[in-house]
Amino acid sequence: MTLYLFYFLSFVAILSALLVVFSKSPIHSILYLIITFFSIAGHYVLQNAQFLAAVHIIVYAGAIMVLFLYVIMLLNLNKETEPHKTSLAKIAAVICAGSMMVVLVASLKGASYLMAKPGGDIGLVKNLGKVLFDEFLLPFELSSILLLAAMVGVVMVGKQDQRTQILTNTPSTEANKIE
Amino acid sequence: MIPIDNYIWLSTVLFSIGVLGVLYRRNAIIIFACIELMLNAVNLLMVSFSNTLNDSRGQVFVFFIMAVAAAEVAVGLAILVMMYRKTKSVDIDILNRLKG
Image (cartoon, rainbow over all chains, first blue to last red; front, side, top):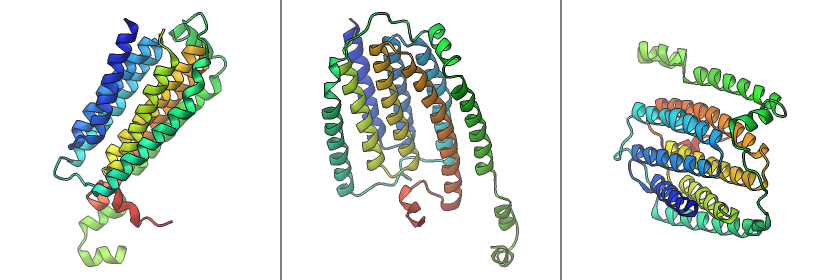
């Protein structure tokens, strides 16, 4: 039963991941990416990692995907504005990615000698919280500083530049002088 | 209990699809989405190994990767919006003028 669920979720994940790459319109790509993320969250639940499944849905489907969709709508991207590579570059990309997959599978193939150990409650909030706030307390606090720095950086980068505002408000000769 | 080999296959395929997307597309936002796909493939493999070896440190690392990914996406999309304001396009090939 679990194995069938695994195959179903894997099928959904791989199919929608392929559709992310090959669909024409950017907004469809992002919507397929949301489906991929939900099936990966299903995999986490299947592996008894409930805490990570919840965090994954909240962070990815709730925050990152909304950010992607907002940016796409803000920039007004659609099928017509979509740039395309030449077909030679596309074939080369497929060959490169395929050979990389062969190399990765070949290098990871011997891992099945790892035997499963008994017990399996490590993914629950109680056990994960003990590790997170004991052994990994300093990295946990540092990640909050990282998020703060990212927030400040985003505001600084995304702010409308003072000079460009002057440029749009003044005649072109003045603008050239400032430039 | 699902054997670890299945998860190795699944996350390898997902990672390769992410690489394919980065090489195949020119839209910078889709390239970002494919980078997210690669990060998720690695996360999935890390969770399955942590589950197999019964070691919760792998899952803690996945948690940290998610925090870093959130920060990375926010900064990256801000840079993309600025790039769109300058060039009126999200085509990644326009950025080949950046010579360092």
